[in-house]
Image (cartoon, rainbow, N blue to C red; front, side):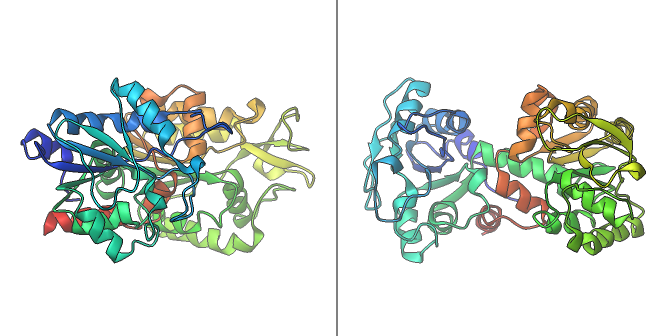
Length: 397
């Protein structure tokens, strides 16, 4: 996809002396006292900010935080703790500016943090008058918040319409490159892993991928519904019986293309959903009426691992079992380690997926870990994200 890279603007000297407006994702978790409990997103924003400062730009950064009411400031909505943490990481004071829509005083080489952008009236609905006002604040707009790329808001879309130049920051550019590699021009075979509790939440993703992938691995409650579609009994396992026909359509669409949806040949069951529940391995055809399927079995895990090790591209969204309980984690661990051992280009996204990657310490072995949950899922659905759309339009203009 064609888009302007902020890194290129900096390298070419085009950012020097310019007003640069960076939309970052600094929406960090806080405790009841307002202390930041995890600062990954702040640290992820540093390369773009440093790039702008080193290029000699006058730098403005903003982000949303929480779910504030537009036009109604409350202390808990303030980016003040973020400004303090950003200052610590950068080794410099980071002034926090309120009421910034009418203009910001910032000189080349300086950095300011603009208060929570979702406090501005019209931000969420991308009101045209706000978008125009935002566009006048800068010479270069930089979108570097992939977690918001699926939202057409004032500071994620509107400003990109009106700013003299609209570009992708290093974080967003990396996401765009990785998604393009995985889905637009994949090395074959392309294998997708889509797991989760419900087919209904990922039905459009499954339908979209069925047109693209060579293998579609399903896990969790989704796999249980696909097992029902293949005529297997699943006891009292989580599933959506009303979506069995949809699962059958996905299987049929894949078969028509010579692709497959591997159905588990063995499973790990329990009588209760509990951390101390006894795990029993059974063939897929031997599940009892009072059994709950909580993981794929070792035979299935190995079959899937072999497919992943032979893949050219892997897209991973969701653990294949209740990996939080160790006795039901073998399937997810086997999948994770197979991805780590594969020579394939691998891209992974989604909160539970990232938790599994962290649990098994394979973060250095996954080609790209996506930072945006909702945005990543929308890309898998085949949607064009608003941020990608407007940056593409501006690059082509």
